[in-house]
Amino acid sequence: MPSQFSRKFSRPSAITTLMEDLNQGVRDPNSLMLGGGNPAQIPEVKSRLQNYLESAVADGALLEAVSNYDGPLGSDSFRDALAGLLSDYFGTGVTPQHIALTNGSQSAFFALANLFAGRRADGSLKKILLPMSPEYIGYSDLGVNDDLFISHPAKITLLPDREFKYQIDFDRFVLDDSIGMVLTSCPTNPTGNMLTDSELAELDSRCQQAGVPLLLDCAYGAPFPNILFEDTRLPFNDNIILCLSLSKLGLPGVRCGIVVAAPELISRMANLAGVISLAPGSLGPVITEPMVRSGEILRLSTEVIRPYYKEKSAIMMKALKQAIPDPRFRIHKSEGAIFLWLWFDGLSISSQQLYEKLKNRGLIVVAGHHFFPGISEQSDHINACIRVSYAQPNEVLQQAIKILSEEVNPLYEEQP
Image (cartoon, rainbow, N blue to C red; front, side):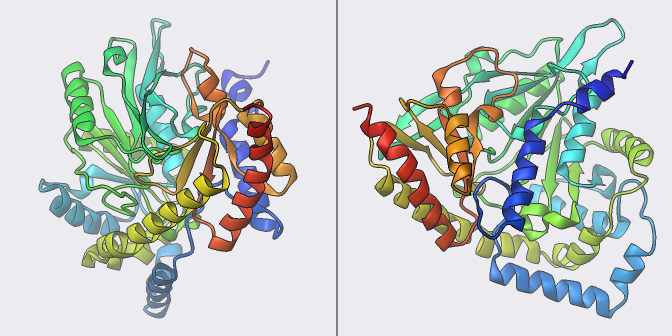
């Protein structure tokens, strides 16, 4: 008889399907890959990263790094440099003992989810509360136990110019003994939504009062790569866990996630890392340590990466609204990350059916129903949205919009 672990991870998962689509899109020159989370190829960022890589090769630092194991928390010198940068950013003391490196953020989420939630000795199940859905597709299958997540639909505010925004319904936000952790992405993947400062403060306050850790997934956010189109200031204290990443900076292949939290939790992460992977990879830290130490990582994020994505987002939103003029088509307000969240209200087919029609034409997107983990209440809205990336070159985006409009407009015309 297979173990519970074996049964759980022998089943297909949404995130695996997404990554398979991403691989197909990258390898197939005829695919229009708007489905995955690959960052854009920004020339100035690539040039600087190449310079750092060449320097690490020239002075022997790269060979030295890949010829030896780091400790289970990752490169000591990189963690020291990052602690200095984060101390300045938050205005509070962050030490290397507050930082653990992991083999990508996804592995960090898996570890943290199962440290704070799951089956307890008395047989009850500690769960993870997502303050609102939709949320990141990769959270859905993190738990060794099934049904690990609980969430509620976001409140929807309709905005001018066929836009809308999700907000937390705090009237339904309850922290009781069944909740082991609260988790949210900032900005939100898939929607590009950014929690307001007041929402973040309310989350932080309620979690502290309940003694429940608050995990902020900042893979797209502050302080780097800072793909945020409105200024915000993240809270940080001993009850908050921050997950950062080098991926959206332009280095997804080095698989370097970063956990910033109270030293007691980091010590537990070290024990877990030693068992699972011995040590995280050293390539990302050795390439980026000089830019972390000098602070250039923040300059690149704020002066190059953020305006690059902000401009692309605005161009694509305008083009989509022109290509699909029906008033029932809406786009979530773009406040960060590298995706647009499209709501096809009143369409005669589901987002999964639309995904399949688009895939048959070589356009890869992600059907929206995958992004509602922990939701027990079904609604038409869950099956009426798709996520698209705007990180691809403009000519790819133009072709994608053409195909999308050719599939959607006739359906709307059939339903006046």
